[in-house]
Image (tube, rainbow, N blue to C red; front, side):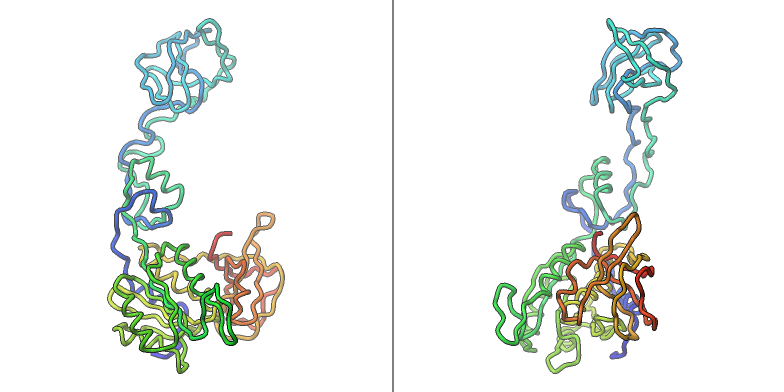
Length: 399
C-alpha cells in the first residue's frame, strides 16, 4: 500500500473508485459551469417559422414589376394577416415572420420609397430569409449528456424553453487544515507560526470547479481532536480534503484518521514533484484526499488529482487541457527523476501560445503561485528546457 505509483495510475484509480453523483433539476440561472446530465433534443424546428434576416421589404423574388405597392408592415412578434401578390411588397423588420406569398426580402438600403410604392435600386438574388428548421429540426440532438454548460449552452437551453435542466449537483466539500503552527490569515504570526493560505486556495479551487465548501476548519495536530472534528463533518459531504498529514511524520495523522472512519486507502504516494505524499481513499460514495501541506504542492495536487475526482463526481469527461507552448526564458529546475509540474504563466503573443516559468524556491514558497494559470509538465529528461523550446503546458485557469 505504501508503494509510490505513477500519476497515470493514480488518476485511473480515482476514476475507477468514484461514480457520478445523482443528478438534479435546477433553475437555468443557477447551472453555469455545471455538467448536463441528460441529452437535449430540439422540441421544435429552429427557427420555428420563416423570418426576415434584414430590415427591408418582403416581396416575390420573380416579380419584375418596376414599382411595388407597399400593402402593409410586419414587426417582430406580429403575425402577418395578408398575402403578398405580384406588384406588391410589405415593410418588414429583422426577425418578423414572412408573409404568405413572399419569397425574398430586399434590404432597405437597396430600395427607394415614394408615395406608398417601393422601387428597387438594384437587383439581388440573396433571399435574406431564415427558413423554418434551417438551424435544427424538431427531434435533433442539440446537447449531449456530459456537456459542461457555458454561456452559449445556457442561451441555447433558454431559447428552447428548457428552464430546469437536469445537471450535476454542486460537489459538497468538507475541508480541514491541520497544524499547530497554522493561524488565521488576519492574525500576526508569533515565532514559529505561519498564516493559513491553503483554506483560501481550496475555497477558490472549489468555486472554480463547481464545488461547495460546506465546512472549513483549522485543527491542531491532535489525533483525537482531529478524528472528532472530521467525523462530525462527514454527514453532509461528497469530498473530504485534509490539508497536511499526508506524510509519515509523528504528527501526520491523515491515514490513521481515514482508516478509523472506515475509509479504504487506495494510494499514499504519487511519483510527481511537488506533491509526492498524497493519500486517496473512499468510503461508499465519499472520497477523501489528504494533501501535502506546502502551498505549491497543494496547488499542483488540486489541479492534477483532486480536479479529476470532481470531474468524475460531476459526470463530466476526464479533461487534460495540455498544449505545447513556447518557453519565453530558460529557468533552473533542479535534478529530479519525478514527473514535475511547475507553476507557470500561459499567454499569447502574436497569435502564439507562450509560457513563462514562475520562480519558486521550495514547495512551501507561496510567492511561486502568484500569476499561475498553468503548469509546465516536465518529465525526467536530463536536459532542461531552454528559451524557445515548445514545452508541454497544462492549463489550469483562464488565459
